[in-house]
Length: 522
Image (tube, rainbow, N blue to C red; front, side, top):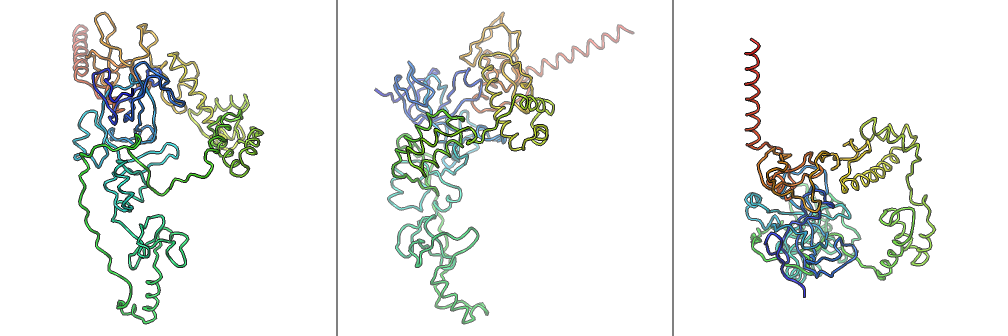
């Protein structure tokens, strides 16, 4: 029987739609901050699905809807560490990977945002990120959506809590209901135009002749009756003296009614098949006939042994274009005969690779123009090969990091090319104390054992010590710094009070010794 609630290791009880911290084993995540996710459902321990990391666990599994932190998708620094991005990314993990509860709300459902962010384990979001097309969308509560058909509004509000849409459609969806003045049907943004004179909405197909495309951005449109009346007014020279047409169809611009603010704070969560949101924007989903043939064709393409991996963009585009033009079987035969030159591969000889690496080491980074002059290749080829070379180097480095082996490649010391230093370089080679790689906490430091110093605040007080991630040069972090980094992804290098006292004491002792030494010399 499927569980409806689970008790975590810290004693907290979680149910579906609760937000939690999720952490992979230390060997997989290497000290990165916790993932934040919403529980969709609990699965039996025998559940196994292709494409998930968890294949079965004695303590049960949980299906999660993950959120992104801004640092996960961009290198731009974001000062607000409580801000998240919703996503359509799901994962199945053992219940043991869930570390504890947290609280996530939409920005419009938070009464006092500043007070909300002061509370521990509280986060908020306002946008949705699509990792496949690398684009952000706006997220708006369904209660604020008015400009949609009445039956659609009822279904959306009963099934989904949020609507995902483009930024330019937010004002249109939250405005009053709009209808075509010809057929009285709903006038959607994509299929209707608005007259700049009478302010009426028309379906493009209801016009005679029909309008095949909307006016370009920055240009207005006038309906045929208003255009005809304007021509009459121009002929009668009424615009010369600033007179208005008495028989024209122009109407005064309606005053926009002030909408009553909807209380969004205490609405219970609404989901449909585990999802809180639905896309409702410019890109309408279109399912072509014979869609199962496309899936079968792509499964066959994935099995082919070609010069590039199955996820290569050139390979996928070539497969889809051949399927649409040739059909199933001819396209499959066409893809089987593809050669490396059909995918525009960038390959370097061993001599070129050696020159390339020497130039990187000499400059301390990548300069496509200087490398291109030496190798007699275009800057675009140098840049493409650099990312291939860099990924191979990172793969070797990450494998060494997971095995806790120090790296011997000279390029591991170049942060401009390979990013943060490896864990093998950060760990102290002389520390023979046994580490538990499956946990990120050292535990209580008892007498006779090595006493830690926090790598960020320099404190020596504390019973629980966290392992340092690979991005922090040190051995351990105190409980406050370690938990804040895991939860919020924040590293603050502010000195603690006890470390300041020790520093002041050491400085005073040095001054006393200096004075004593000068007196003895005299």
